[in-house]
Image 1 (cartoon, rainbow, N blue to C red):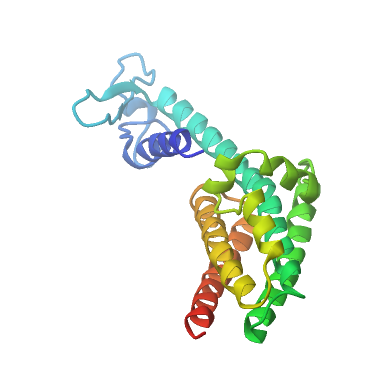
Image 2 (cartoon, helix red, strand yellow):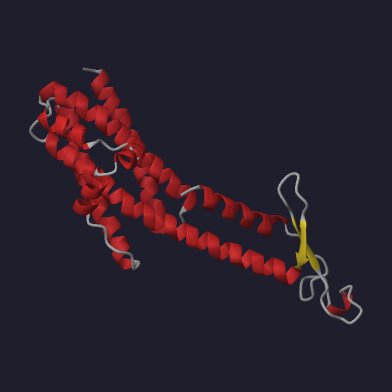
Length: 237
């Protein structure tokens, strides 16, 4: 998700910030007669800076503007892709947190930790609704949380990358009770939240939709606080 987007954004930044125009007709302080061509035609050139060790490319001003427009279009498409990917992947990620929090209802010993699990359950249920609503309103397929989660369980590497618990770990959590459940819940939920934070940061850096950006920012802050709360409660036991 990152490599190509970064390259295109860097290219756009070069074109926007460093492309050098001179004597372009119609621009401030210039007239068609000022252009260096004897026949009055625009012979303006632009310099596109290159990477260190490479030669800068000299192109016409018109070509430079086309390159800039193309880069902007590519950046917009990549940002839209990041927005859609964030929503579709976060929905099953949230669903696992919901399952974990539901298990806490009749297994957890610490009342403060149980209250925090209840809050996570409510928050993540509401956020799934927001994400599915955004998908439908923006013409994207609406992700079914149950189906997407079951499919995700079949890809252990993806689970690990996103900080999610494996099917085996979820079974262990379901079988635990009392203090054992509390410790395992935190052990699994902390990396789960950290995975969500990583996903939120990626969206904030690479996305562009205002709604998605705000949701990602809210998740980053909320789940960071909840990690601190879980670790503090466990350390106090």
